[in-house]
Length: 141
Image (cartoon, rainbow, N blue to C red):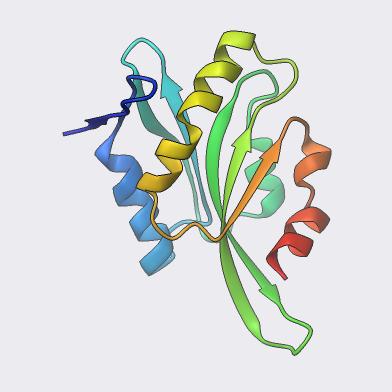
């Protein structure tokens, strides 16, 4: 049973929360890409990235002309040589996407993000350079 998002009228498919929980607690996935299905007015899981997939695999899975939400489980080593991980929420809104698409994603983002308990860092990107691996690494530390 999906709950409607009061601000935009969107519902969040239960699979979104379930898969996020699996990423967070069991590390079943490296990343998840979410899509707003406009006809159904619902946010759904579009792609699940397997644990062995890279950050490059993740960025290639985002469309060049449509918005998406995504979460990415980023592993890194601190300056003190500690192995850590942070869960990033990425709002992907390429310049080439339609205005209506950008507005729909922008108006639903905060509400959707609250459904995913455990996000540690948020990143907004309009082109790949704004979410390069260097930027992600800097934001994680």
